[in-house]
Image (cartoon, rainbow, N blue to C red; front, top):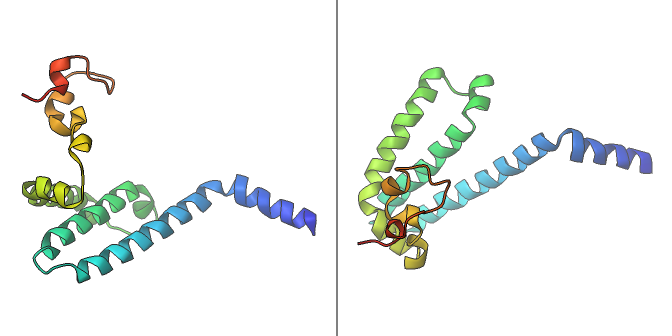
Length: 142
């Protein structure tokens, strides 16, 4: 009996680790999705449109992250896969005007927004900074 348990453990933890982690991640994403949809339905009617857009952006992002698996297994067409980028860009453009209000509404503090990339992402990415700001003026907003 102990040998069988050890064999199952080896398969579970060593040989099928990627599948186990993928299943766990998929399950957690499903729970997050279901709870988010439920909360949106209970939200104030005036907030629902932007919350639905954010939710759809989350779902499109999940599809993009796992696109290879979906295409390989015939779960999404090539045309459907190609339209994901357009959907993503459209949702970002629609949400962008409300970004500051959303940040405030979700309790994102000024300190969180003070990360250099949060203030001026174009400047942050204008040179190879290896994730670090090299010049003081890059972190101080004028």
